[in-house]
Image (tube, rainbow, N blue to C red; front, top):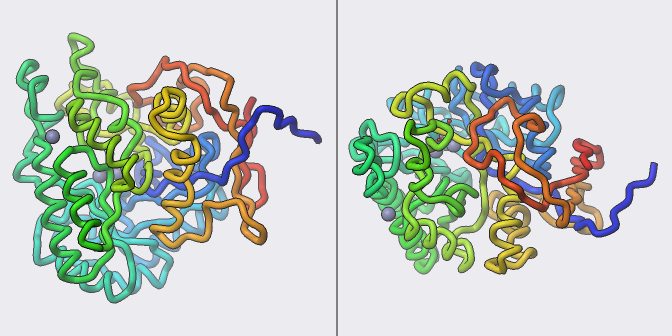
Length: 386
Ligand code: NCD
Ligand code: ZN
Ligand code: ZN
Ligand code: ZN
């Protein structure tokens, strides 16, 4: 069967180093099957999944479970992270060497943040000796308290409890110092604040093994989205929260100058029921796998803010290099992980077309270009669109 590639871009398959596939335990939100189908539709051929499942992915057996389930039901390569502490409770370290031996590609505290400095220091010492990345959520729970959006003019106007950017940046500052002391590779998740970007830039200037990712939503939105309607819509609620225009500009500058290595979606599906709850009690998170590349292509490449090949690097060779994954380039002898993207056809973001179970995105109804029309993982067609 012939495939017409006239006017299409042939790109290496995308890597997303931060997704929540929710299996085991939260299959009403997402499964490995639906989450990886969403990834394939988004042009992704490799995703790294977070361990805040139930049970938490904190043992070699559960790392094995992710690989086995993906082999049966997956539409892309899935590389699991192991939790830093058992049950993500912040009380006891996991067996980090055993997690690595089972195939964990890093350890993480995503969703909660390890609050104890001594525990994080010990985790980094072990991870450094194993050459395993430490992937940090960065949230000081004492500063974040029960906040539900960015702390600033909008939270004050609405009378909602805020999460200051400081809750993120103080933890990044701490963890950069611990990484320097221990020699660990520190990877900063979903960077959202101007101070945080400056801290990562500083760490890189000192030659430290510190890398960072940013989400499409933190690159494109500001806290004003929460003020659009009278009753605040929990589909606008995410952690870290969408911050100010100054923070957004800092993230974009960081992406352009190389401070931020990669784009990651932090794909975080929740059920419609959960997202219909009042703003303060609804869970945090946006889905992102299916729209990440077209959003950034449309908003950043078409507007001349970043070159197409530079954006593609942030989805391919950069995450592959940072996590030492043998992907991200089209080269002789390399595996056929490809995505073919239509840069011209404009489509609207509609939940009817979603492969993910989630509907929680602030980008519904947006018209964007750059959709994948064909995705190939390890030589196998995993998505075919039009
Ligand atoms: C994530 C989730 O729902 O698991 N939510 C979010 O808003 N990002 C947790 C996380 O990434 O910290
Ligand atoms: Zn997180
Ligand atoms: Zn800020
Ligand atoms: Zn996350």
